[in-house]
Length: 437
Image (cartoon, rainbow, N blue to C red):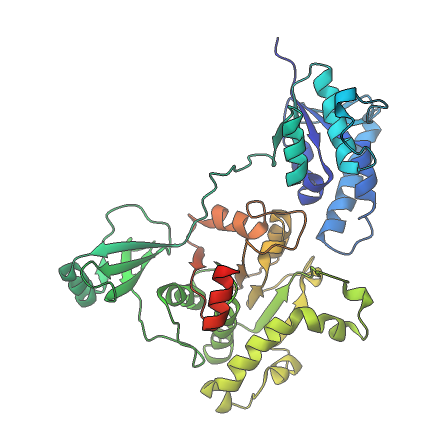
């Protein structure tokens, strides 16, 4: 009889998703005692990580009523949950590890199971711990349903070479029947095979099941898209039928600027939304908010400055603003039409009829993204922007972050649209630096 599989969970996977406790029906799930100690450090943190820590503590507190956690208890999905202690002595061939490190003691629990002849799998988001586990012959995984190196992100656009006649016909009819399956609102760049500079941009309409031509000259707030991907992104942002849009791209590709320009247009000119709400997670690369002087707004200023910079650019160059009674984003804030705040204050709210932009969304977990999107009330549009290659959150990576997760999950839904912006348009220097540094 094949032995029952044992899953040893690291701290980061529990903080990433507390529901992972119930992700392995019929198996044995082990939480090392050192993981409990690490989770305890986050319980007072006012963030989604702190909320996850408190959720795990409450779950385990409920489970302990069913029996002794060190001996193991049965969960509703027929798995067994147990809290394990590291071995007091290690085999001589393992002396290379520093057992004062928590991650190595978690590895020690998995090693102990392996030495007892159990089929064990170490589940961790820690890349180095997965490497060490593999070196000791332990099966390791990223998480339930993990995507390995074959992970291929959805770009939101396809490129197709066509004849001059096909391109001419498309310009006349402004419609094109697809020859294969496309995702809702997926873009396509039709390129003249004889003259690459001659092209047309199209977007797939999931209702009519046809490609519609995208107007090249269309822009908002004196902001004209500079490449095909930006044109398609603007189409998604300005379409009220699309409730959630994700924009992915490296620094300088225009993600945040396009989202803000479209939001101002839809709120102030077209009156589609009552308010523009802009938010971003706070992940400092050095000292956090508590060490900065001043009140809350002064503390937030360094992290929100990229938003203010883009707003200053848009409000300072737009004819729409100069012809109205509102001359700066400060007035919009004073009037309550524009709100800029950290994501800490999103939890528990209901947000109807608003244009919600979540910047730097690659730093969020899928659980955090779910919390944000489920706040959206009737008539609200959610925009997620970010770069999965620039992550500050130690508990997510290029694959497991909330932005990549949402792109994959919403790909085939009519309410969603996605675009990957590839070309930097901030400046020639910024584009060169992004590519070679």
